[in-house]
Image (cartoon, rainbow over all chains, first blue to last red; front, side, top):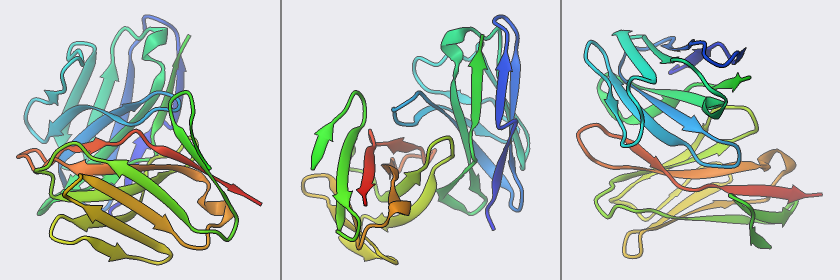
Length: 116
Length: 113
């Protein structure tokens, strides 16, 4: 149990376009989801915390208008990279906390975004 | 031996030897610690965890040691196998209301045949 999926697994887009990444908890309800960004050979950096039905909380230095997060249900959170530029190219990973087990995060497989 | 690369330190070990990967965590109030394995192009995979009221926990071929005095965590892998080659991250649960994880810088483990 506790499976998290992401879609798409990879995406290539032109500069200036917007890209939506989905994060789903497949077999549990997730009150909170987290979005991370990972550059090559670096660690995971937390971008934002997403709570179902409320606005996301962004980490310092992360532009909320650039990275739009929506957590409309207990099994789905989306990250939209708006007006993407080459410097937004990265590996985006989500994680989900299940209800009643707040200290454990279950990670998705990641989405590779390449902006041309 | 251990060396510092461009971003990730690398630990090279012979197949069959034991590996020890170290991590310094940042917050003395953190109460839950996790080790993850990440293979290229994939998400983090849970290995083992430990709570702050313990100093040692063992799993299958892996042991985690926690030293709260110096804020240090280590992962020991017994009889290292080629399939253990990956990047290993420690994470600390900040014990705040949001239960955020802060990840360490990571260590690349290379298993030599």
